[in-house]
Image (cartoon, helix red, strand yellow):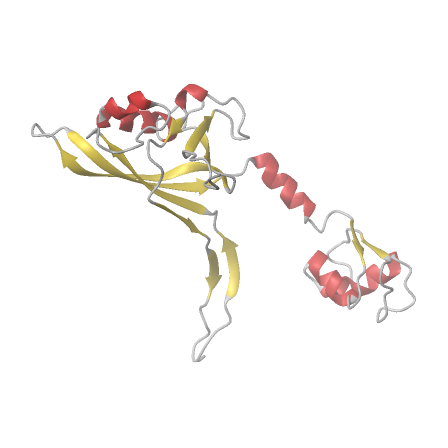
Length: 236
């Protein structure tokens, strides 16, 4: 028996709401032939400026940019590409101009109801489930009919990761020093380090010790639970 996996086409789903609700299946786009390649971009911004006369400088963290996903695939009108369109065999006969319009309706066109292009999920296989918006769409026309009508276009689409306000707020609150956090002590943990990871400031060390009624800040018992409540930042 063959162990080859079933061929799956890349699908771009489109949504009206920023929390990826109210999907419109009629605007979804399936690539007629799967991407030639895709690339993920992860970028951290750092301040590397040094003082006057310094030979080097510390790279100080500034921000993390949203992840980007870049896809490259072909839209073809020659009717010669094997497997083009997959199960939708009629798509092979669709003009390139119309295929481009299908793509633009999904990822690019302005939606008057929400006053912006729609929110997207790019899906391919089991590993790609990318919630995003379109960042850039490049169309490189490479083959033409004698009358100038396009026969083939290479699409390069860049998508920018998107999180709803609610998700960003939840993630912010989950790591906020303004909420009480609990940690189970493991072998090797130090109270000053745990304090720093919660408050980004080790100077609340004595307040944490007092809140947990610790008799020593140097020895904390593995498997015990420590609570890290919110503190006034002006108090030490």
